Length: 607
Image 1: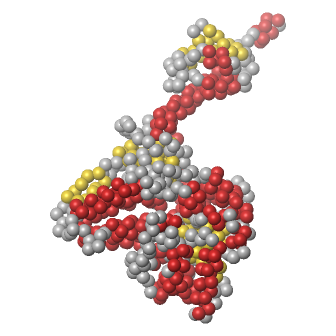
Image 2: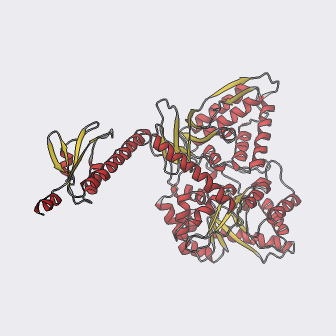
Image 3: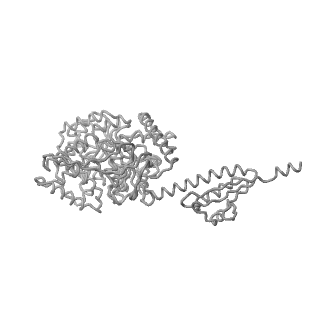
């Protein structure tokens, strides 16, 4: 009996040899985690190395062993749960080494490149494919001015097809380069392009360099010098220093599933286009200075690029990729359902549209209405007639019950060929938005008349852009009321509001509340003016979730007594959606294709 009792009371011993596999060795962070894990067991747990035995729960003693990469040590457990302890701690230690190795790899892959910025969120696996191109020279007998004219038509067609303002802006940029009488030669055109690039290098407008190069390539292609982007023959992730806006259209129809830009800006035209076609992509802000082969992982959800993934990492990433694909399909299938957070807070997801086609697309993608109807598409090269405006507005108004129309937003980088605007040193701080409309009242009055005639007693909202002072709004509304009165049109069911994009309005919300019916926050310009940083600057950047910007948005929603929505790009960023809804915004307006995704995102919120 005593013998049996002695056997039962004899401490059990279990030990195993382990190897440090992390390139960082066994350093403080994993040691602390391991030491804490050993405290979960009743057994005495020690580590033996170089004839020294230390208690595994003692962090300072473990550090004193100086265990480096490839070091081998004995893990010993003595006690009744020794076998359970060693089995658990073996798995725990191996996971620690794997995680620490992964962090080390990611650090060498990413941290030295700067702050990784996601352009469009997703997880994709593909072969690394370095950006390259070639030239094909054909004998085409047209002159430089004819080629430029063809590019203008091409950009106009792209704008009409996609409704993307970028193409319209590029067309206007090209027109601004043409001297009186046109170009005398291709060399003269290329010299102007070169001079234009030199003029903006290192300036607030340096992001325009890619646009100048893009325009040059488009013109050259019509002269017989075609630039061909080399494309992979299997599923790949493109790595490029930067890409031209025209490349995005080619990429979206290729086997490229993700894009890594070594340099760039989240608000550059290339980035905006990558987002618009939902291509997972990110900006490294640094160079990849080594050859990359085999499959890599682009995880722009977690701002990661893994160039040498393990089998386990590849397996996990492929599962995530497939899960995201299923979630995307599910989001699209539920796009017409009412949107509520998990706690029942109802949120409306509207669309920013640029023309009839994008309005139809918004309807197809499940938008709850139009949060921003940009009307600039009607006022392109030729001034539209009153009837043309009326018919277009009618067609769009029939699609939705909730519609907000923005009056003409001209100025800054947008101009009209048939209206002369005085030359300004800084057009972004000059005759822009409502200031332009008050300066060119004939055009303004005709647009208002067209909207009034088209609304057919349907409740709509009209908002004026770039309002910075109360008097600008009151004068614009007086003109609107005068137009309605002159033409005997009842506009009692039309509301008038402003785009809140100038910081001065934030300081005067209580004053504006006495005049306006609603606000729509244009976060792109509000950020630009709040931080005095041009929004497409490729060096100076603003965190989209800057506490300063979020604080400004909270002041707006907390102060105003009038309805307020968000219609800037911020509303289409996952992390921002959570913040915006949490601080009180219940109307978000995004690009049509993002509507299903943002609706799904809102439904996942736990408040």
